[in-house]
Length: 254
Ligand code: ADE
Image (cartoon, rainbow, N blue to C red; front, side, top):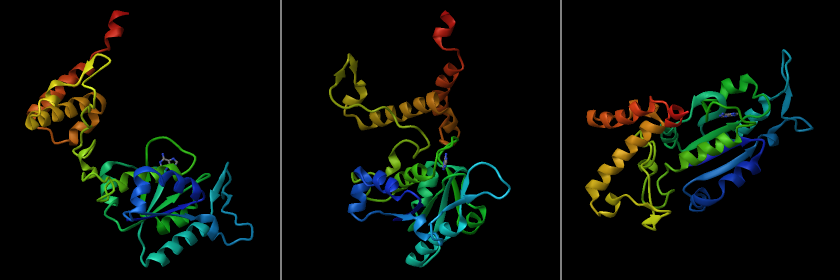
């Protein structure tokens, strides 16, 4: 899979994405990441990429021309018009389902804005998907683009390298992941749950599913609705949900 990141800060994204699992995936040729410097496509002598906004107001805007130039350079290289994701707090909130969907693409352009954003006219012409990574405002689209590259790359076969697809972790079945334990069996007086030492796969699976449900009910009850729970599982979740309606114990004491 090929990621083309259109940015004013190519070093930032390449440095951030070249280590650890993604770095190895790049070395193996499973994913390809290039940062396209938008400034290289500015058509004026001073390579200016920003300008004042019509109508007044604080801040500068990224000009349409260099953004379009960078986009056209990618299109020319790969020979077709791929999906273009613009990272913006105005977009749909990024979820695992979107990562899965975008992982099906052969090439993906990620467009990073700066300043007060980008001239609307070029967005209208090239952007296919508007994506936000959450309801807060960052200084630019680079960190969000890196978040997308990471989440999407995990879905590419071979990237995780342990034979697992990225699909058996939190969110793949719409639930948060169950708690996990490693050696030693006892740490700070806390013991690994007995069932995990039992060597009984069916019981372990049952326990993990139950823990996922309980944890999701406690931490992200909004996810339960689309998690496809059976009536018994709803009952299990319901015990936690009922409890979280109560005020915390400390309040009652004071
Ligand atoms: N650019 C600035 N803030 C952002 C956010 N929350 N998500 C995506 N892109 C952004």
